[in-house]
Image 1 (cartoon, helix red, strand yellow):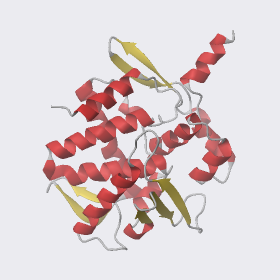
Image 2 (tube, rainbow, N blue to C red):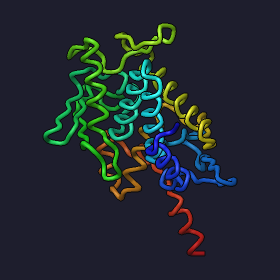
Image 3 (cartoon, rainbow, N blue to C red):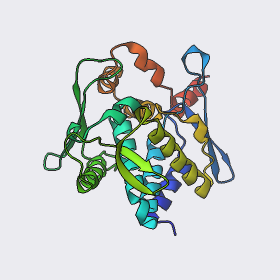
Length: 263
């Protein structure tokens, strides 16, 4: 059985084009196929941004899986927190993989979440706080998602200096207290596998191989653009120190169609 929330989310994701993120939907009957329209810099195909529709659908799918496979619930909750922080915080994979428990502060009373980035590719020696709302106007429950994962980690014995995200032991079928390897590449790969399972189950036609470790960061940047935020605010939230952030921003389907309307 598929929960109503997931059915609704999938219907919404299928109904809407992924405009705003350099994609468009081709409908073959009832099946959408998302495919990239833009080459990345240096002539390479840019990895696809995860749109807010796909993020919401995957989040609902992971909810369903956590309820269906309770013994693996920590795995699914971990993925939800990873994707939520990566998308809404515009975090790099390496930044996500380096987070410690003390780096994430959840303040339900003030309806906010803040994440401390000790260092990054562009700021190797200076730390910075990334501020997130408790929830978005589109219904994404950032605070609850993060708080739930923090609660699990504390129950598992995590201290302030423990890694926020830990490795999953496939053989034992349980979450460990080991830090992630390769700056979280395994986490990014695992999230894509969940997307593939969801896509196959609902016949969505997602080309999961088009998504990479930067897809959450790219998707968040384009979601800000679609919401009308100016480039300066996108650059600031994503902590870019140059105009390279412009490579992340893509024309929406609506913007592309405006070209033909003017012809």
